Image 1 (cartoon, rainbow, N blue to C red):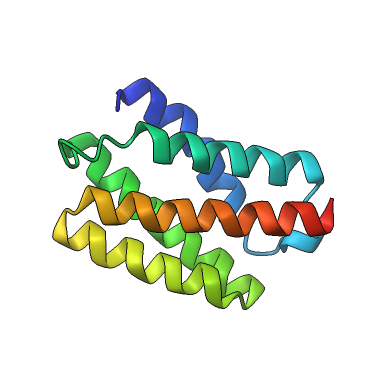
Image 2 (image 1 turned 60 degrees about the vertical axis):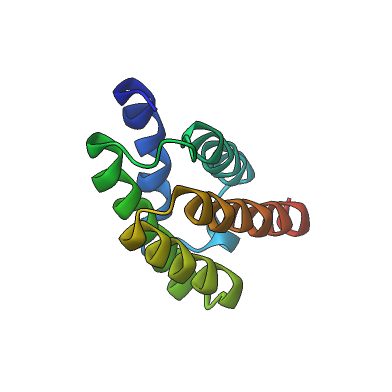
Amino acid sequence: MQLLKLLKLSSFIGLLTLSSVSYAELSCPDLNEMRHDVSQLADDVDASIGFTREEDEFLADVVDAVYIVADEENNRVLFHSASKMESAWKREDAVSYVDALDRVNDELDDIYYSEC
């Protein structure tokens, strides 16, 4: 993943970490943007080569952001996915990280389709 893509995708972390905002209060366009960014991140992490140094810190921030949203929403699926992402990140297991990130994306899709 290129540094430019990391910077572009960091905007979704900003949306995810708005601790005073719940999914119910997010606009549908914001939620849709999150869905797109999470999907793009999952596509951009190259599971065949693992994490680069510049990706490492960013991917840890993504884990933290998903934990925040999971806690804010009391969402077990997101919490479980964040836990799997964290474990995969610690092991530098890009395949497992992306698998868990895909589950986050599925959950965001479910929320989007039920709310919007």
